Image (cartoon, helix red, strand yellow):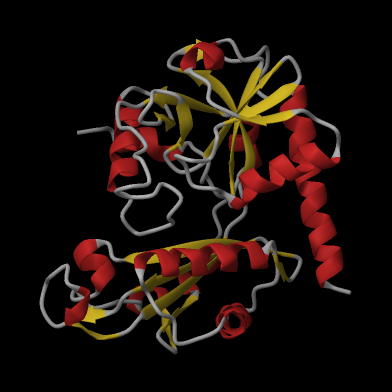
Length: 313
C-alpha cells in the first residue's frame, strides 16, 4: 500500500480555504450542503463509471474558455451515446446560478459531472436506466498553491499505457479513470508526485491528470494528441506559441528526448503551467522554473486576460 503522505504535493495543490466547508452543491435541480450532497448507489457513474465531466475556472467573474469546455462536453456525450435534456446555454445558466448561490466571483474551480442516470439494478446495460441523466455541479474556492508551482513536480514513467481509440479513446473525459489512478499509484510508490504515461507505441503521451510538454533548443514539443486528453490548457499553450512565433511541434518523441530536455512542464485547467524538475530520478533543466516555461505561463495568462476582457464587453 502506498504512503498517503506522499500525495500532498502535485499539480492540484490548492491554498486551504475554510469557505469550502459551507459550499452549496447542485444535484438535479436542488442545492445541498457539502455534508449532505449524495447520490444513489444505483447511479450509472457509481456502478460502472458511465459518466462524463468537465472542469472550469472562474476568474474575475468569468468562466474562462467556456465555449471550449462545453464543446468538449457535448462531444463526449455524443461519443458515449448520452442525450442531454438541456442546451449549452441552459447548462451555463445552471453553473452560473450555482456560483451565485455560493457568492463566488473569483479563484473558483467548478466540476460538472453528468452520468447516464439511475439504474433499476446493477448492470452495464443502458436500457436499464430508469431516470436521468444525473447532473452534479461542485464549485469550490480553489486557488493553486504558488509555493507548489514554484517548487515544480517530479514524474515517474508508469508501465500503465495510454490506450488506443478503438477501445477507450484517451480524449474522452469520462468517469472511467482507473487506469490513470493505477499509473499515479505507481508514481507515488516510486517517490514521485505524478505519473508520465507512454502510448501504445512507446512514445511519450501525457501524464495521469495533465498534459506534458518539453522544451528542446527553444522549441516546444508535445505529443500528437492521439493518445491523450486534448486539454483546453494544452490547446491554449499551442495557440500562444503560434501567436508569438514560438516553434511548437505536436509529434512523436520518446524518453530519449525527454531525459535530454532543457525544460519540461505540464498543463491543466486548475494549475495552468507547472514546471517538472525530475523525471525517473533524472533532473530536468538547470533550475526548477525554467525561463521558457515562465514565458509560456505568462503568455497563457495573457490569453486568459484577453478572454476575460472580451467577455466583459
